[in-house]
Amino acid sequence: MLEKISETFTDVFRSISGKASISEKNVEDALERIKIALLEADVNVRVVRRFINGALEEAKGEKVLRSVTPGQQFVKIVYDRMVALLGDERQDLALKGTDTQSVILLLGLQGSGKTTTAAKLASLLKKRGRKVLLAACDLVRPAAAEQLAVLATQVGVDISREDVRDPVLVARNALARARREGHDLIIVDTAGRLQIDEPLMQELARIRDALSPVESLLVADAMTGQSAVDIAKAFDEKIGVTGVILTKFDSDTRGGAALSLKSITGKAIKFIGVSERIDGLEPFYPDRIANRILGMGDIVSLVEKAQEVYDQKEAAELERKISQETFTLEDYLDQIRKVKKMGSVKSMLEMIPGLAGQVDEDRIDLQEMKYEEAILLSMTKKERQNHLIVGPSRRSRIARGSGTSVAEVNRLLKKFEKSRTMMKKMVKNKGAMAKMFGGKP
Ligand SMILES: Nc1nc2c(ncn2[C@@H]2O[C@H](COP(=O)(O)OP(=O)(O)OP(=O)(O)O)[C@@H](O)[C@H]2O)c(=O)[nH]1
Ligand SMILES: [Mg+2]
Image 1 (cartoon, rainbow, N blue to C red):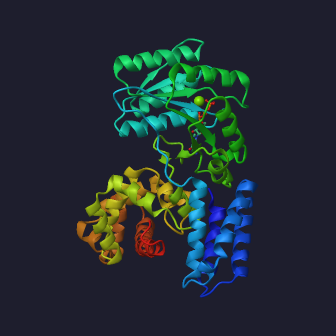
Image 2: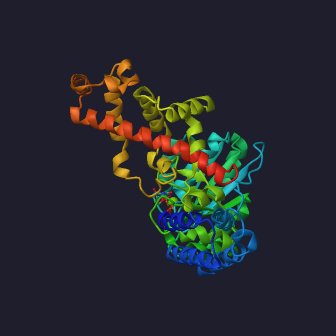
C-alpha cells in the first residue's frame, strides 16, 4: 500500500536534494508532482489542497531557499506536514486500570474486519497484561459467534456467547461475568451491515448505553478508499467514535483513505491491520508511516519488531558483524530461526528503505526457509563459519544430507552473499537517515 506515492516522493526528493540551490520554480514543480501523486492515490481533494498550499508557502520562504541545504529543508517541510496529516502523535487506547473493567466496542460495516480485529486486539492486549473477555454480540450472521470462538481459543482468551436474539443481553451478561471472574477488558464484536442503516445504529447505541465503552473504535477497510471517511463520519454522529482501526493496510490499494481520515474526521488512527494473521495488528505511528510514504523506510518499526526477538546486545553484535563482513552462515542460520519466530517476513522487509514495493512475496516463503535451515544444518560448524571452504564435493554431501539438490545448495550460498551486501547497505542507510533528520529516527 502507498507504494505509488512513495515512488513519486523518492523521485522528487532525489532530484531536489541533489541541487546546491533551488528556485521558487523548482519548489512549485516538485509540489505539483506531489499533488498529482496524492490525488492519484485517492487522497481527498481538500486535504491535498491544504497540504500543497501550506507546503508551498513555507518552502518558498527566504529561510528555505537561501539556506545552505535547501533540498533537505524542503524534504523536512514535506515530512513534517505528512506527519501532521497523519495525526502527529501516536494515539494509544485510553483504557482504565486493571482494577476495573474497560470496554472496547468495535463498529464497522460488513466485512471490514471487526471479528478478526477483535481477536488481534485481544492478543495484543493480553500481551500487555490484560485479562480479556471477548463478547460475541454479532447475532445477525449465524456463524459469527463461532468464528469469534475459534479465534478466542487461538489467542487463549475467554469468550461470552449466548444463544439469544438480543445482542444487548449478551453485552450485559458479559460485563457481569467480567466483574465476577476478574476480566479487566471486554472487547465487543458487533454485527455489520452492507450499508449504514438505522436498525444497525440503534442496536449499536443500545450496546453502547449498556456498557459505556471507553473506546468505540471504527474498524474500516483501507480498500474502501474515500468512502471510509464518510463511514467514519456517520458512525461518529450516531455512536461517537473514539478512534479508527484501518484494516487491510497490507493490500495494494492506493491508500488515500489513510491519508485523509484524520484530517477530515479528526479521528485518530490507532492501529492498522497488516495481515490476516492474529499478530497482524500494529500500532499506528504517524511519523513512521510518513517515513514509509516518503520512501525512507520504517527503520524504527523494524528495529522495534526485531527487538521483540533480539536483545540489544545481540542487535549491536549483529550490526558489527554485518558492517565488518564477518557475518557467517552460522549467523544466517540464527537469523532464519528468528525470522521464523517473527512471523511475517514480508511485512518486516517492507519496512527496509528502498525495499517497499519490491519484495516479491513468492520468493520469501517460509517453506523455502525450511529447506535452507535443513541445508545449513547439514553443514559442519566449520563450514558455516566460513562458507568459502564449501567446494563442489562438500556441496554434494550437504545436498544429500539435507535431502535437497546441489542446485539448491548453490542457490542458498549465492543468496547468502547477496543478503550480506544488502544488509550492509541497510546498516549504513540507517546512519545516513538519522543524520538527515537530526538524529531522528
Ligand atoms: N489482508 C488482511 N485481511 C484482513 C485484515 N483484517 C481482516 N481481514 C480479512 O477480512 C475478512 C473479513 O474479516 P472479518 O473479521 O470476518 O470481518 P467482519 O467485519 O467481522 O465481517 P462481518 O462480521 O461479516 O461484518 C476476513 O477474510 C479477514 O481475514 C487485514 O488487516 N489484512
Ligand atoms: Mg464479524
